[in-house]
Image (cartoon, rainbow, N blue to C red; front, side):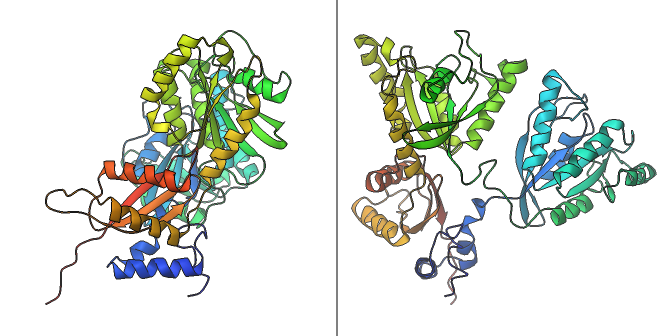
Length: 486
């Protein structure tokens, strides 16, 4: 077995040749399709990113819905409906890629429109290729010309889409867009689907086979990235100032002072960290407006860029639904998690008793997250923050060798077999760790594995291997029944 094949199964070169050979032998013995098994990590591999850009009301969101094959991006017959970058998975001719829908870009936009334009520009920078959408009926405007210059400066491959070409008579309008100097304009009707196939073929040629960046906006290398998240006025900025040893960000009793994420390089515990102070997450994004709306969206973006999320909870107040929802956001984003109970200096004995009961009841699903009790005002127990973050990152990056994992699974199944359901008892045949950051496991089974048994496996995995401070993903592949030849 050549080393070229090593690591194909578990993704990103994480299996050596011996482990790969052992794994494939197990799969063959249990009757799995080796082609399917060999590509099991396809769902986890990072995908090329296509940014869809253009001025307002040229039909970008309608085109995105056409590309992804479902009505998911919000569409209205008025400009400015899309404000932030929104990412969707797409597939064309067997090639998978991500489509990022951006808000309309305008020249010298101010206020909220300026933030929308800024998001569109960031979308271009983060993408592997750009789909530039122009309204063929209106033709190229001064805004389109300015956006062409911006795209050229990025150096990204670009495909020009001449939208709203609903019939042959409008194709002459599309041809006029050759003047933009971006090559062939592809006449398309996003509304009816006309011409979208040829355009997508050109998109696949522009996109790389392997993307340049890791998942989303997560980058590799440099100082470890820590996002401070929590509901408004919980003390995020005060905590950042305390760990920095100086006033780096504005602190005010008024909730919602911070609107933009502030990245700070801070030396703490002998290491340099990048702390991202984020705006507080409001109860419901759709209930917020203006700058608060963007604060919530940018908090989510900061979480994407981080490796570990420190969730601040106000220990002096009753644990709120907002707190549990914010923790769920960090878990669903696949980030390492530390829960910091702030304002501990304001705690009374009675409140501490009730807080323990609230934690047992409302945070039972994240018992694995390190917990620190701190006071951003007095600096109490701040020295415990770095060890908690380091423990969470270590768990987030933990890898279990295939042989050890299967020995563990064998012992577990022998001692605690899956319950019999409908006269059948599914068995876990073998498994592999399909990735880290966070740890992802794929189990191969003879039948459907119930959610309760999966949670039992996760609990035992944590008991055996640690995985402190990290969510764990467990997926199951069921062996298909094959008809026996007579």
